[in-house]
Length: 539
Image 1 (cartoon, rainbow, N blue to C red):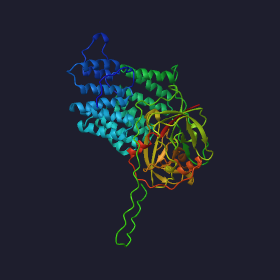
Image 2: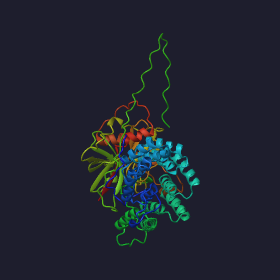
Image 3: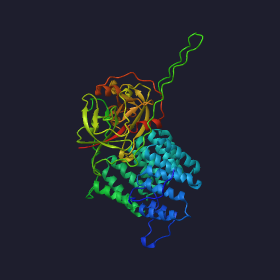
Image 4: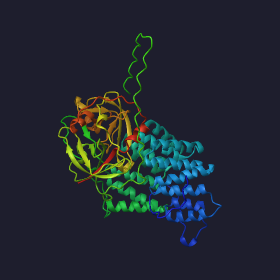
């Protein structure tokens, strides 16, 4: 396809990942070159970079592929991955010399749009062209992480860390992954270790501040991000520095935050007595059936047809997700949920929205809707929200797909954990199994699973590999409380509310589970992207 190499109205001062600072003084009028344009993009001087690229485009001696690549970088950096895709596609067709960088751009744009299958394929093609392309490894690790392929992501990131010990991109992705897998303390330790080796890393200080903030260490978070702002200024990344200044002004307008404040606010719910279980604050497959012996007849009957293939919706995320209508730096409660049949109702946990006055939801493809609380359960930690209008994709979870969990069945949690760290644009997956069909104390309304949960997963859907909804996440064992009571250290066990309890809450009767084939995690992610929602609420 043809993409005109023009750009108008690009805003300066937008976040860009990494780069070397360069900004030529206006009076020097340097000779336009690809190197100058690239340096301006790295320094977040996007309007100046566009001017240089337009001049280069008028010169027949400049490679069109290089210009397409840089325009793609600009659009990717300002949050318009769909626009960037066109430029990267043009570059991939135009020149073999630009093949690796073009495939990398396609992979990063696909990842931003939620198409993980294409992102993985293009990142792999980029590495075939250039095996040392760090950013392509990072795309694969992020895709693995989002799909719940924890072991693959861990191996890849540790290998990258060994190969490139001074790469801030590798350090940040590894720290965020460790925080998700092993808890925030592991991520903080990794970032502090890296900053000790590379004290000029602005991005690492920035990431450390974000992680400290979501763990409630607000004074330390503010100090880390003040340091990051100064380092960004030293590197000439004025856009990032300005964004940091806006955040600091919102959370600490008088500059008086000097001591660690109280822990992050959590929703309060009454816990069952003597059960060491805490709600998550918002912010092997079954054996195959044995073949039956044939009847002694002259002609063996034809085998039954296989179950029909499950249609996978290829969701397309908005190039720029619609913003949530809350002031920067304001306190909000977050959780996850799932859109139900009919398109207007969303199931989540009661503790996510309890006591909240203003509730908004954004689905995985980026559309925002205002919601109201339609119903809450007195028996289970469940709430039903109603949105003002359905999401445009029309992707919903049929009531017939809500089934009971069974021990040993795959359990795949989808939601928006720790959005301060991992972002709130698209959901993430964690994979495990149903460890026990009843909850703690043999509670018949809940189940236990090995899929990890973090803050923000509350109310998020739990699927199997057939796309059935087994229930919603609700909390995890309080290992500290168990240790204080018994002196025994136990592993985290994560808790969900059963699909049958959801149906009872909705006044629906269960139906016989239909036989459907398994689908890959990539296809499951695509199918559930439009129906999985981030819930943001404010008092």
